[in-house]
Length: 342
Image (cartoon, rainbow, N blue to C red):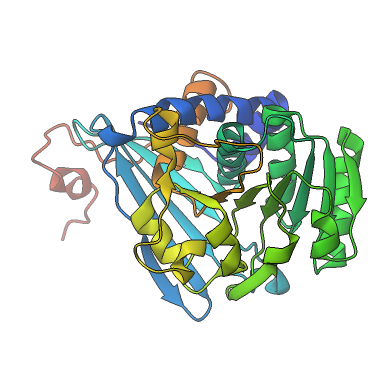
């Protein structure tokens, strides 16, 4: 039998545990897995692009467990009553190939993306950071705000979105949770006085929602909207001034902000900072940029954490996902017993 967490139970688990506690737990698992980065199988995600959006598979394995996530990205979906991103994920036992854990990952991905952002900011942002600018207040924004409060104590937010309804939604959700929120008239105004900048926009195009002249020395940029070829959020000139950190270089060169740069544009992979092989922030004036596209090992960490936390609780179900004939060689026997005769 396979352990299963559906949408109702995922939402129930998050609500009862608290998203900030879960984000903190995922950060711990991310730290563990990035520290053993070299032990994982790694490949850029397998993507199927259409004019409507993209559907992707994100696999990885540590040779004990195999994981994959199915995820889509369809920017025009909200206008049609659908979510931009949906997902589910699987853990399997490498030794026999059987799936052991299946979970919804639309909610879990939002938590893992936020956890990853905060995990990286702990490594790269100035320790005295107190204000975060958020350009884009869609479905990821609340999770990002909670993650940065959890990991860095950030409670002052300056926000902007081209959609006033998205801003109103964000303020409605987050103001009661103790955040100090200032709504800016434009993106440039949002960045004024910010120590950390998070960009999370959905438009599938080469955009520059943040201009180079808005970036001050010492800022940390958390660019999480880029997730496919042809989609960017930052003025390419920012990359020339910043120290750029990525998850998995081959994937980020396809999908991240650095797709606008030459193939030999210098970047640092995060695992090198986690393990002490390379320095992260080296001075208060350094501009650091997390060119985030999301990577399978982050999903692996989130699935491991969810599996471990719901095990033995009422949030976990058992489903009969794998056929198990009494004789492993007699699969037909399962259906033959029910086949009509004559």
